[in-house]
Length: 66
Image (cartoon, rainbow, N blue to C red; front, side, top):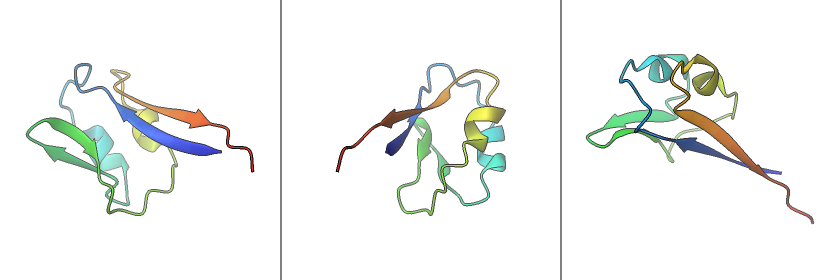
């Protein structure tokens, strides 16, 4: 199964709690808003999703047969 984080910055209120919740630096703040930091070691714990009261962060899952 493959996971992918989806961040909808149009829903984001800028509280930055998701940044604080991630202990691995998987999210970063840019001029365009919150983005996934591809150079981090994301463990897909989903703490960022759970702490986001605006529903701006979600995860999609794709089942991969192999």
